[in-house]
Amino acid sequence: LTMVRDPELNVDLTGTADTVGNDEYNNKLSQKRIHAVSDFLQRIYHIDKSRIQENAVGKKDPATTINELNRRVDFKLYKK
Image (cartoon, rainbow, N blue to C red; front, side):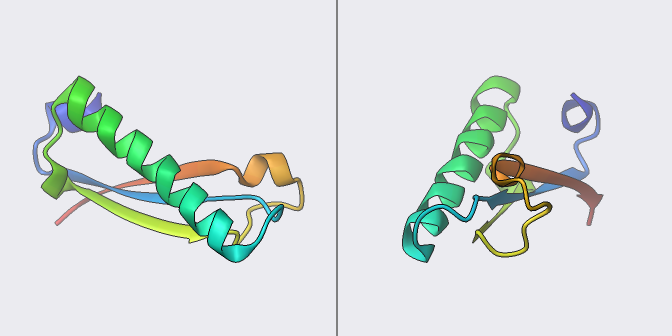
């Protein structure tokens, strides 16, 4: 994993949801998605929480009109 090799590298996680359901449900669902990924990075790869930025956007800003493809977590790696 790149973040293990480079301790100056951080990650921005953005969780999204499809358009099925109301805004509150989708916001919670996208939050759960990024928490699962964040937890995985911390537990398995021992990435410090301070290096992980979490953003839940629910069903805002869909990548496509295909609902299934909007159920995702996007990763953006960066250095401060």
